[in-house]
Amino acid sequence: MRIAEEITILFPNEKSETYYIPYIVTEKKKRGVGPKGKLWSRYTNVRTALRNANAFKENENPNKPSEQSQSPNKELQLEFLKTATEPYLKILANWQETYSLRRKLYLNSNLETIFTDFPCLRLSSGIELIETDFNQKFPDKIDIIYTTWPKVMNAINKEAAERNISIAEVADPSLKALITLPFLFQPVTLKKNRKGVSWRPTRVEVQESFFMRISNFDELQEKRSSRRQKLSTYGISDQPYACVAGNLEAVNNFYIVVVNDVVYKVDSSIRALELLFKLYHALDVEYPAESEHIWLFIQEIVFNIKSRSTYIWQN
Image (cartoon, rainbow, N blue to C red; front, side):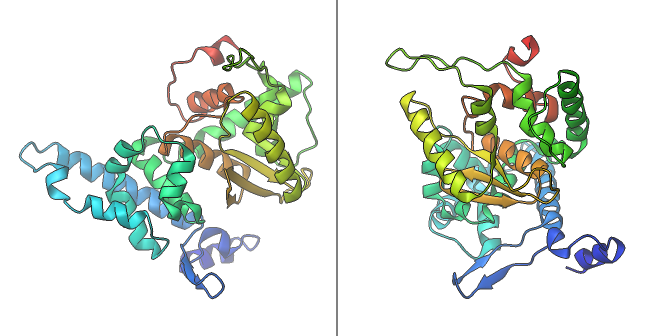
């Protein structure tokens, strides 16, 4: 908390809540809300990286007992996670300890099953749990987006300008790149469903499965309902996506990540992109079918994780 306050002294335009909000218990909900903010996210990321580094060193010792023999309580920890929504720090510790077991048990599960089995994911602190899993899976990619995205963002906006592609007047260059990116690629025809019907989404439909633009939350409900109905027609699942709400010409917009009926609020467009990507890989779920080629581009160019697809290189 002290560091967050010192930042606001050095940079008067910043708010301490952006950097750290402590664990609190609300009278209305009768349950705790985990700590959050940029400093907390950084702390959990670094701590996970250190834990992974120590685990690697320990695994190099052939005489050390196996993880299974050391942790007879993994099943009990997993059962705790299936009902617990607090206290947050205990949830976080058990979540980290059961990483390997959860990956094994839920490797082929869908999002609905995962979010039903673990109610802690439905809270705002679920963001940290998702990131913890991603950081264990890709310890060298924890903060890579903040190094690579500015360069990719500039390249996207430059390419769009050269092609005279202008979707809207957008004040935030990062947001502009995200809502423009789907218009730089040819849409992909999705394979036929059981009725033998194929679907070639429009660029707008690709965009809305990636980074949707809405004026208010009523519009979100309308678009979500319409999208789900269309996806159901083709036998395609509704995967997570980001939304920006508000006036795109303004700097201060409202960003959310939508996972079925769960909504995570984040503070910027790049944070929404980061959380979405980490969610797909932490929980081992597929990219949205309409924008899979966009996500493969993000995967290789922004996160430097190779894919087997050749689509982005052909385009």
